[in-house]
Length: 368
Ligand SMILES: [Zn+2]
Figure 1 (cartoon, rainbow, N blue to C red):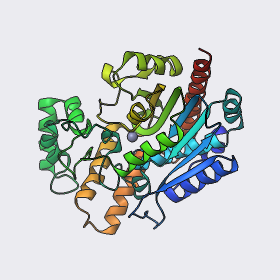
Figure 2 (tube, protein in one colour):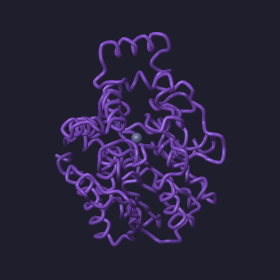
Figure 3 (cartoon, rainbow, N blue to C red):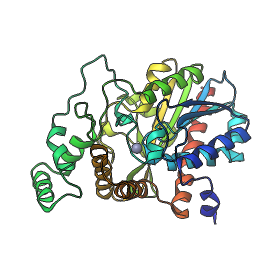
Figure 4 (spheres, rainbow, N blue to C red):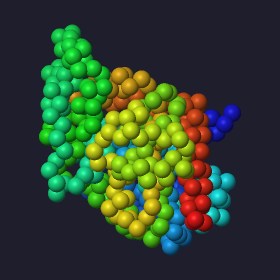
């Protein structure tokens, strides 16, 4: 049963995931560097860090990035994929023969990974933080309307709160609600999908990693693993790059016509401002880039959103009893990570396919 074989790559805590990743990378002889998060500890009082493992020649002109944990609890899925890849002789054999460099970035949001919350230590959604802060902040006036509906005065929502939400949805529709809530906002620091007011430590660290390990490449592929959108166990390939038909064409030539582009209005994901992967355009301007977020489905989106609202309510109300906090975090983890063999088997099968496709695309690019 292939799923049971796959499951041991995945972990139940951030500490376990980090150890598995570092051990597997070390066993492969990877170049490893860790960037500890200053001033914070994990849920088990462990060190928190973004870890990087690199395989292949430093001067390779083709390079593939596989990253995990941009959104805290989604790291359990992405980390499992990274560890599985490090244990995959066939995949790494292909990598070696084709001369492609592999850069794995583990736990982009280690605080959220360990403490089980989507946002980072500053309540910043990292996929809304990679904007140009020298320019005026993106406006999202609709967020102020939906904030008190999503995060009412008491939790769980009362019947009156549910009625207010229903009235809003009746008037504006679910799509408008999701766009208002999730496209990113820059004015409510304890709110949902908050993009911050400056580049976060995570943002600056990812840029350092790109400058240190990726600036020599002429072609770069990037797969950022996420969970929580789409049917259970299905991987939706979401184009996460800049609005460019040429760049989207690269992604589709590698990963197929079913790469969805939010700017074409086809994806489960709303158009968002400032995803992590957009750093590659700033830091590696020399490279042609193919990138996707691989979004693995877990629960129906409304259920996930409910647990996400509870988690955000917790950020706003840290005085809640420890038992209630644990319960909210546990449910959020269950919403983003399906801890069973079948789901993990489906995850790795699709992530591995995406990796092989990217490697094939990069190998062809080297011949062009
Ligand atoms: Zn995500």
